[in-house]
Each structure stands twice: as C-alpha cells, then as structure tokens.
Length: 251
Image (tube, rainbow, N blue to C red; front, side, top):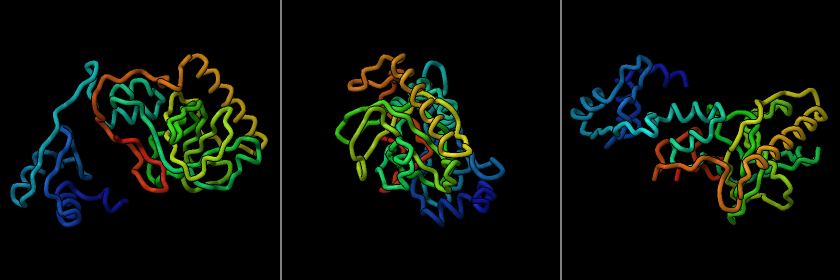
C-alpha cells in the first residue's frame, strides 16, 4: 500500500522488520535495495542489525550462461512469454498450482468448461492467454489453454486462473492442479458479447493445438520447455500459497 511504499529504508527496518516481524536473521541478495529512497541496502541492514541484535547475510551473484539470475529478470521473462529462458534461470519450469473451485460456470454455457483457480489480489507477473500443460493430482498431463487475469468480458474484480483442458472430460472440482505455461497466445481482451468471446476461444484452442503439435512433446514424460541446468530453485514469483488460491510451485 502507499503507506508501506512511502517508508524510507530505515523506517522500513524499524517499523516492519523489527517492530512488525521481530526479525532475528535476514538473508538478502547482494544487490538488495529497499525503501522509497532506494538507500536501504545490505550495509544499512548490517549496521542496524549489530545494534538491534539480528544477523544479516547476503547471497552471492549466481549466473547461468553468463546471465545474472534475479527475480526481476525472471519476472520480465515470464511477462514477455519467454518461458524457456525463465526455466533455465529458475532451474525448473515455471508453474502455478492451486485447488479448483466452483465459479459461475460460464464456460460451460458456451461449450468451453474451465477449471478455475482463484489468484491472490496482487500484481500479476502473467496476464493474458497461454498454451499450458495442466498436470492433475495423479500425475496425468494434458495440453490446455489458460487465461490469467480479470476476465474483463464478465466484469470480474478478482484475478483468476481459468484452464480449459483440451479433449478432456471429467470432474476436477476440489482437485489440485499444476499449470505449466508454455507459450503466450495473446493478451486479455474485453469482447462485446459471448459470441465474440466464444469465437476467439476457438481460435485460441486452434493456436494451442498447433503449438503442441509443433513442440512434438510427449506430455506424459516431459514438458515442451528447455531443460534447466540448476539443481535448486533460485527465485520466487508473484503468487503466495493459500488453501483456496493458486500459487507458485516453489519447491
């Protein structure tokens, strides 16, 4: 919120880390900056930590293919649809997962049923329509089309991950679903009516089918993404785990 964004680096340490969280030990990146003035850094944290009794350490820069790994870089890649490079930097394919909930079931009325996973109300790294691989709780993987955003045609106020599994029939309500974005198809659009929306969805499905045909991937054994050389996760992203909300697969 605006009050938090207006805090200086020192005010953030005092009000949030010390008074709010009771910090005992802090691990930050070597280029970490904070506070509205961007003057908060490792040196400031270390100095305040010595006087207030909490430890501070920083991680070293990590590079893949001579490129620095950072959460900012990963978010930029994801937002632009460059999932292969993002996977190399993360050390794994980027994914979202959550529990399927009952919604308005509008997709069924136009012949396109979707599995809906509510997202937490915070800035979204992904926004738009994507070709994805949907993995069920039993490990089955299916090609799918997903919309990430606010569904402007139906006037939704809450961000949602909507997933339509291609050539699938079954009840997914209350099941855990993991979604791997593979290719960005388009941005979100507000359509004049449901007929226009339905026509566009059919185009999205056709694009996704062409993508998976071109990718020539066996979804039962692998994902159509670049293999990742890192042995551990190195960055987190925009969704936080919750029982009824979609979140990132951080481990």
